[in-house]
Length: 130
Image 1 (cartoon, rainbow, N blue to C red):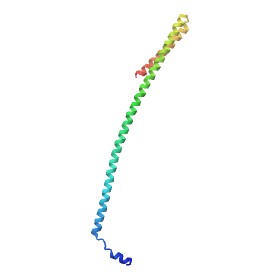
Image 2 (image 1 turned 45 degrees about the horizontal axis):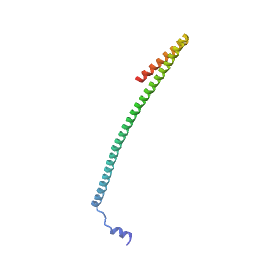
Image 3 (image 1 turned 90 degrees about the vertical axis):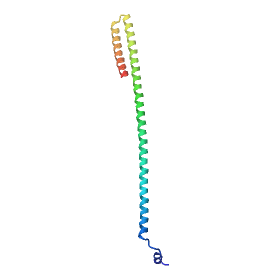
Image 4 (image 1 turned 180 degrees about the vertical axis):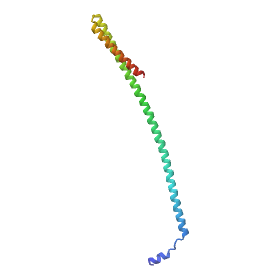
């Protein structure tokens, strides 16, 4: 058999067979596209939910860190105020000692130093309170 005879021996597809195979092909492609869209939407919504949960967790962590920072700054302000009160106490002790020795000039300087330390302590206390 020659090639020409082989081609002639195959029956030609009818138009109805071609239409059926084209319909099957188009239906299969449509189902595939619909399946791809459904899969994409599922991934989109589940990914979005995960991102929103992550953003919420991040905001909670940031708020907690901000609160810890505020507490630490308050503690620092309190300790600075205590230090300034100690400076004022030491300056008042020096002033009392200078007055006992009748050294009024040094006693006056020590009292001014104590006043400055008390003002600084008052400012630190106001910072810690706010």
